[in-house]
Each structure stands twice: as C-alpha cells, then as structure tokens.
Length: 422
Image (cartoon, rainbow, N blue to C red; front, side, top):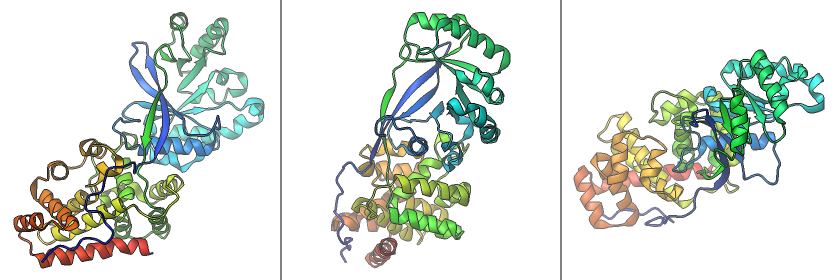
C-alpha cells in the first residue's frame, strides 16, 4: 500500500526567506579593561526618528524572539531606551529583569510637576529587579527623588563641556551610588579625560560603532495567535493550550525560543510544550501572544512549509504512541514540527537547533536521522514524497504496517487542517 501524500504539499519544500527581518543595531558598552559588559539596542526598522512606546515594545520583543545565528541578547546586559508610556508595558514581564537596563528619559519642562507622579512606576520596576539608567539631568535638583534609583548615569560627551563633566562626576560620586557611563566617546583625549576623573564605563565610536543585525522572526499565523489568546482569556486547560501551540510551527518555535533564551532567565532547559505553558503561566502567556499578534504578518494563512511541519509532528507523535511513553512521544512531535526549521529560517539546521537547545535524541534525529526518532522522521518524509522504497525501508525498521502508517497519516492531516478551518 503506497503512502498518501498530503494535498497541496510539495514533496521537498525549497529554502526561502520565510522569516521576516527587523533591523536592530547594538553598540557595546565596555568597562575600564575594555571588556564588553552590555549592549545598547537601537531599532533601525522604524521610520525616521520616531521613538514611541510601540517601538520600545517591538524592540525588546524582537531581541528576545530573534532567530539568527548570532545571539542578540546573550548573557550581557541590554540597555533599552524607553518612553515613560512603555514602562508599564506587559513586554517587560517576558524578560529576566536582572539582564535589562531601562534607559529613562528626562521630563523636560514638565519635570517639576511629573517627577513625583512617575516615581511609583520607577520604584516598582527597580523593586522587580530592573536596572535603571538616566542621563546627566538626573543630577539636577528637580530629579532628586529619582537619584537613589539610578544604577547608571550616562554622561553625553557631545553636549557636556570638560568643566561641566568634572563637576557632574564629582557630584554624582558624593550623592549617588550609580555607576557612570561616558557615552559618545570618540577620541583618545576624551577617554583619557573622563578616565582621569574616575569614570569606569564607556560607550562610543572610540570603542565600537553600532553594529547592524538582521533580526529574523518566525511569524505564526494570526488565526493561531488569536485562538491562543482566546484560550488564555477563558483560562482553558493546559492540554488545550498545548494543542494550539502544536498546530502552528511558528507559534511552537517562538515559545520554545523565548523560554530557553538567556533573557528569560531560567536555569534549566525546557523541552516540552506542556512544561513551557506551565512555567509561563496564563498572564505572561497572554502578554506574549498579544505581542506576537502585533508583530505577525498580515496574512492569517499558514505557509505550506509550516503546515507540512505540523503534519509531520502529529504523524510522528501518533506512531510513537504505539510503542513509547507519553514524554518520548512528545519528543517525536518536536522532531517533526522542527524538521523544517532550516527552510523556515533560511539557515543550516545545526544553527537553527542552536537557538533551541533541544535534547540530544531530538538533535540526532534532526541532524543525522539517527535513532528511533530519526527513523520516524525518515518515514514521515517518505509519506510526503511517495518514495515507495524509502517508505518500505523505514516502515520495516520501525515494525509498522502500511495500514498503521496510512491511518495515522490521515489522522494527522485531519488534525492539522482542523485549526485552519476554525
């Protein structure tokens, strides 16, 4: 009995630019030994010089969801420019506060009225563990209530004269515990001057220009995101939420990417969707899904590649359930749904897997088709290609009949199609 190819699915999806790209620049911040301690991130995708609460949110979200070979966040501090409106955004609940420095803008002519009003928000952020950075205006008397909250004070060498700098550095040393960062350091003379006054952290062209990174994102379908949001709002059972995640390759990848990223701050690796849902909690899951919706593509139709990956995952899970315990059957699903990451992200599979830190048996199956999971993946690929020889060889290795395989394949197709019909 020959395998049943899924309707409308190409036998071999071709590589392409499935991942939208956002442009993010990052500039190193170094210490006195010129060791990088953090990066300031800049959104280079926004139009003109517009800087809003929305661009703040998208910048942090993109940095966390970035699917490129180079880690944007890593284990360094990230310095993020904020608006006062974005400081109450739910996106900040998705990051490890200890990794993030929020750069707080001055209030201008409204300082005398607004400093006290903004104080509770800043104090609450600092209590949650975020680091706060201010520019030199925080040393003015109007901002006295904010000064004890400052972890960093940035001194802009392009606007401060040497005699001003000396006064400000001296005042900051006496009245705050903040670390000082000299920014826009462009010459050796400037570096020597601020160093001589005791400044220990630096940023500017003298050390490193902002480096542009093409931040790839793997966008789920909007229909899947909306379904997830509705389930979370209704406080649906974990099993139902897990099923929704498993029906969209982009959704599944983004969640596993986020929860295992350094920015999320977990000490152990998460390898199952159920674990991820339980650790995120409904509140954070809702925030994450809402942000995904704002960043997703306009079309609600999943790509044929993503659909193929979902069918593979479900087929492999169903077949694994015949012989394996539930946890290992879940690994079979992970292999299937991530088996086309190289195509979706336009990068080698080894690089794509480096973004997720998958278990060794999963990696062996995806990279080398090794082990029981590797044989299952080979069988799933044979089902798509109608390669009788490969189908028979894989089925024999797994001791599965054509009837078992074709029944599971039909069930997988029906299961995957169900989400797109809702």
